[in-house]
Image 1: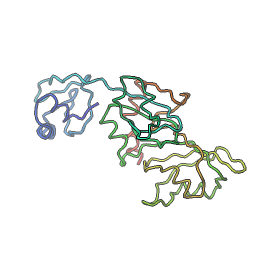
Image 2: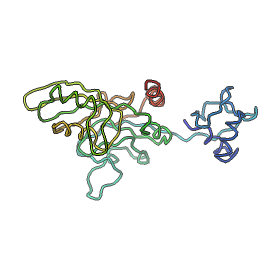
Image 3: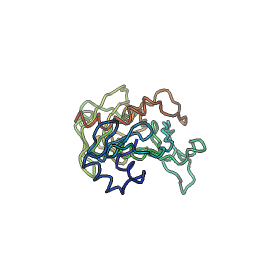
Image 4: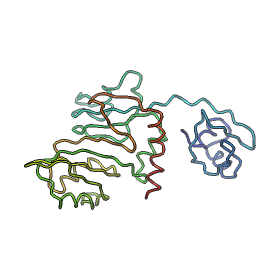
Length: 246
């Protein structure tokens, strides 16, 4: 998927600014429908684009890859590490080293990590205004009381400001430990760990189990798989779905 004005520019029809002008003037149709928003996303391989009634020959779209990895604990989310620690790219097959990760996990955290070379989708999924939901299962030392859970739900004070409300569910509680599921739509650095620290609980284990519509499922640590066509479609719709419910 690409923005319409970028597709027109890549086809050599006009500069990016000139393409935006053509679209806003109503001179461009996609599959017979007039489009006046330059940022409209289209599929150059499938959609028919016309300018002033003439079909535009679009360049072939490059192959795009979407990969889901179950990141193990102790692996760095980075391309390289000066201390020669293992990185997530050591777990990817040859030929996919060009992919970039979407939403990092710190070294001691585990779970769902998305890789792709779809720059437009990456922008949509990581832009703060879209607030993609992410779910984590967290094991903490100490008992997470109902009062502390309520604090997390309402938002806790961090150095850069109060967090947005979160969904919190206590899964299991035993003397000296608790297992909790928390869902947030922000992406601050080490946010979940810092939220629990703010209510006096130390995180012993943190696993991301969902990212938007994607779920970790039964994928074992260190394993990866490509997304299905339906998962890719759901992922592309996730920012708009979130916006509609705000």
